[in-house]
Image 1 (cartoon, rainbow, N blue to C red):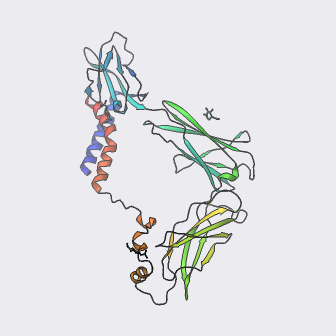
Image 2 (tube, helix red, strand yellow):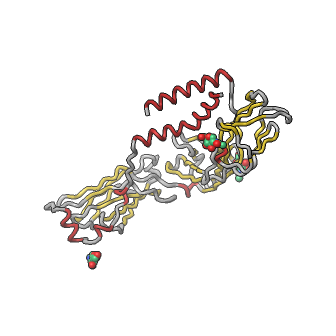
Image 3 (cartoon, rainbow, N blue to C red):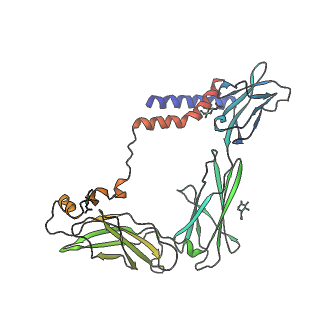
Amino acid sequence: FGSALTLICILLCRAVCVWGGGGLFARNQYERRGSDVTMQCGSLESDASVSWKVNGTDIEAQHQLNGPKLILTQVDLDHNGLYSCFQNPHGERRDTIFLHIGIPPQEPKVTCRSNTYPKGFYCSWHLTHPTYIPSSFEVDVQHNQHSLYVQKDPVHKNRCHVQFPEVFSSSLYKVNVTAVNALGKASSTLSFEESSIVKPDPPERVTASPIRLNPRRLEVSWHSPATWPDIDAFPLKYFLRYRPLIHDRWQHVELLDSTSHTITDAYAGKEYIIQIAAKDTEIGTWSDWSVAVHATPWIEDPLPITTTTEVDFPNETKTSPIPSSKAPQKAEPPVGRAARAVTFFSPLLLGMMLLFMW
Ligand SMILES: *[C@@H]1O[C@H](CO)[C@@H](O)[C@H](O)[C@H]1NC(C)=O
Ligand SMILES: *[C@@H]1O[C@H](CO)[C@@H](O)[C@H](O)[C@H]1NC(C)=O
Ligand SMILES: *[C@@H]1O[C@H](CO)[C@@H](O)[C@H](O)[C@H]1NC(C)=O
């Protein structure tokens, strides 16, 4: 891999030197998948005779040649490539075109959510179909006929943030996200009331511990999500769910404005899984579940766990799945990584090498 990288560096350097010295810049041409494409060789007159290469090899005879024009019918992704034309009879290069086949974007899927009520909200979006060429997005947010300031998220690519201009507003927010690429654009709009998009982040730092001399109790405590800006003015309520690892059925408790709870009906000696969700006391929807915590009630004489398990639940131990412990662990062999890095470089590299070779 090391020597491959060195080779890539040398080739890149030489390719760049050729580009810089010769001023041989390829131009981009974007075309729609399935369309018929005409490529014009520079500004040559229609009686000029040219020959074409793609990726460095002569174009097959069945492609239609029309003076300085190359015509491709019903293009697909495998027509992508670096096309060059050469004027006959001496073969001077007259043009170099990067052909990019893609499709126009469809309406993006947009969702908005406030996890920092009443400060602001964020919207995220994605395209449901690939476009094969780069797309960018424009976002417009309106409230009471005013455009609001939209801030791009520094980390998440397709996300932006908006401050609420006022609280307890009954006017709708209207979000318009437009996807744009070289072949077209498409917009989606979303309208909502402030109260409908409020969804806190899950509670944090959840702990569960046994209580000495109490074989059926577990003490659970947690903190409100740190992203929730004003817990005093906008209190949260909580929903706690718990079950023994070996059961599928959850038990639930709803709690108002409290960040601890004692479970009193646990099965003695059973390991429990516990999660909590949060919601504004008045508006919005429940958060996702917090990270699961595990705890086992106090037991007087620690018994071998396998024995108690088999006595109480002879069959379920084999059948009840525990989703969290089954997260797939993918070990990536180092060879795979090297191969990926090389693949990533290769289209660019190939293009540059081809330029260099002429
Ligand atoms: C040119 O090379 C690119 C990158 O390797 C490849 O995807 C494309 O299909 C090739 N184009 C043609 C017309 O062979
Ligand atoms: C959304 O924004 C785009 C681009 O600015 C615009 O062309 C389109 O008319 C807008 N749609 C609505 C419903 O406002
Ligand atoms: C456990 O499974 C066996 C056969 O798989 C069955 O005969 C038995 O009744 C089951 N016991 C319980 C408690 O479900």
